Length: 428
Ligand code: ZN
Image (tube, rainbow, N blue to C red; front, side):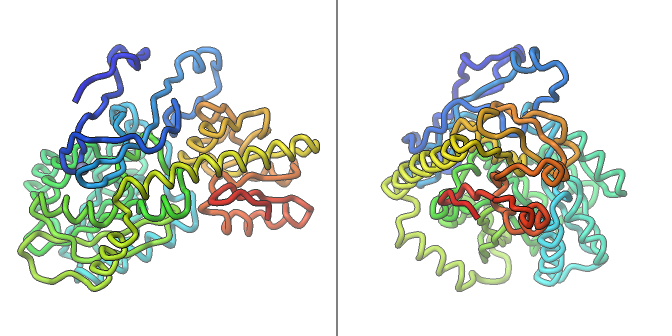
């Protein structure tokens, strides 16, 4: 590993490291597959209070996806310090109805699967504002969260949840175990892809887990990313884009075993991997074997397959820009819907700024009034759509398109039109 000095910024020390080894297998042959350019951090919204200073201090980092010749893992090699990325984090899961349902279902499923009860201990890594832990509490299962973001951990504590305000690591795992005993279930939703030191992370899970305890990790599936051209799910926080094959090998290296895997539609296509300790009871499921065989057959972990994806991303960008510019040429007013982190990859990669979108709207009060990183669109409350009635709305948060369009029926009934940008830009 080496430190790149070009991006020292104004933080006094470099917030970015450049990896020279694969984080899954340690292989040294990494090839660049997709270059999304220099991008700001996807969650670094500008407060917009002292704009001149904020623009001057805004940091940009290379966003490049590389493929490991050893194991096929698609990964970022520019690693922004987690202290910069996650200590003050504005993603709050409870703002979405879809996620409320998703986590309620997950708590029930995992409780049944692992036979959890009032005496069981669930540890959730990256517990966010405590949505899943609340769902466990609703059905009588005790849970502890580990959450590094100071502001969001505080929100969970206000809701009466127990939260360790740290990044999960082997040391944190040992400390939780000595205080609370071994875990019957360790859950991590949308955290595994964020982890740079996978050995320490998986080592911590192995250490904290009881002999028959379960692991449930959910993260975006690289197959969905590629098949549906979801390049906007690539941003500095997501260091790894996992296949089932890569995860299975990685687990095995750390005394763990994958037993089952489910495909779930959340975040544009994710997988939920169910694991246990190596040598525990149970066996691997048929659908795990089937998914591994499918990956092998399609060549998911090969450079050739991954390169085809990069070409499709470039073509999607060209089509979207041509659609938006055509509408502007006709004198149409366009605004955005959503200010998700992923939206900023798309806006910055395509160069969609205030010359195309007047502003964007979002339901999260934490984002309202701020400016999106890089492209600097002002974020307004969703109610503004109906007052303002622009001609078109680009659904930046395209994975919630159905929910958004049904909530905004009144806007649509008065003649408003929606644009869905991915996988193929289209007006609906
Ligand atoms: Zn590798």
